[in-house]
Image (cartoon, rainbow, N blue to C red; front, side):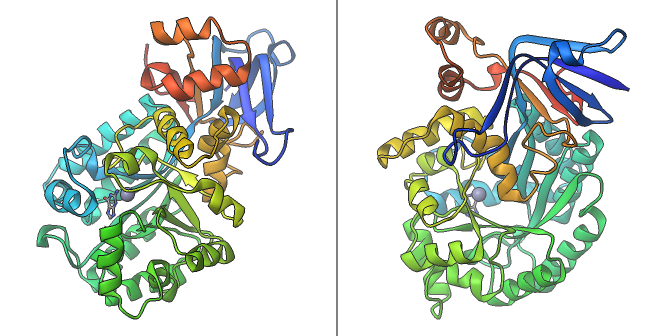
Length: 426
Ligand code: GUN
Ligand code: ZN
């Protein structure tokens, strides 16, 4: 069955930082969808025909759904934990909470809540760390598959420097990851990310096994953490004394390439930046987390100048909001502190097509190109009295987007479509 979704349509076909010809905006536009996919995008008058069901979202803006490239599913009850920086925060709050995912029934209940939160915030695809327990990844994939929602996820591999309840072994981590890949990678819209948590929690033997998984499954993503916090870097280098720098650890086990997502990547050495560029590896900027944990200020422009393409993400529960709008808000402020500017058009490109390109999935998500999945977000830039008052003085699309970027959150999400299906029941 075909249907028409009408509103003010905005989609990107290029990066606004690279070129002026970067987006399509239709004041009275429509998206024709069938079987969960986009068939056409055009002026409403060109696509409307008698008998075609339509949903009218005017005066709201309709964009591709947001993509969150780094989030921790088992941290839905860790978010907003007080007072610590990274290593204390992990030991005090995070590892004990992740241990609860061993309990029967906990992971499925949390998976449902997690996906509801994502779509309530306009996010239609996430790249998620699960807990060490394979049933946490099974629960997330099961819930996402039932919603026909594209997830990239993996169980964390971690075999040291954490409580025994959240540790595996090199062999168990390999076997569990391998079985999850067989069950889920490529099933419907689910994709597996090989997930050594970070160098501190993996022995060299486990990193070796992670490298073996990467060699055996070259089309899987890889996700981990890099250079988030100074104490973390010092501890990491003490555990791998032969490494030239932090990135060299991941490099020496064959993990680098355009499939890897390196969360944070803040305190980098020139050699690390050069190797990231040469290997096509992707840093992921996590603004609310980096401020909350006091980690540091990401250098977007410096990485870009080196030819590196970064993702942007919430990093809940180190991050403090599920909203990619709030993530852009804090990201804007971090870049201000570095003397860098983030325009509203670049910001909205980043959380849609930009993140899709980082994942190599831009043929499926992140744009409104015909053939793409109909994962959409409907944005209300007057969602609160304060936003409405400010919007009275806004004249351009860029101004409206910037109001959404700075003041918007889940209250601005009028609707979210996953593969053409409305997630909000009104
Ligand atoms: N480094 C290793 N694990 C984590 C985590 O769960 N959150 C953050 N922010 N950094 C990490
Ligand atoms: Zn993280």
